[in-house]
Image (cartoon, one colour):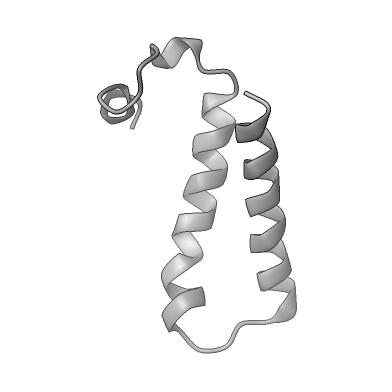
Length: 64
């Protein structure tokens, strides 16, 4: 994933702080995206967990 990302950013991936955490949160969010968007209704707990992951990701990205 980092090799692909290198083509789209202007700084070396080694210089991006918390990149592994950012990619981990993004993966977890994306993994459930189709089920949340197109699947059957999910529990409030699952939805809250995804929202929490999004805000953790947002905080990391804004503070890099």
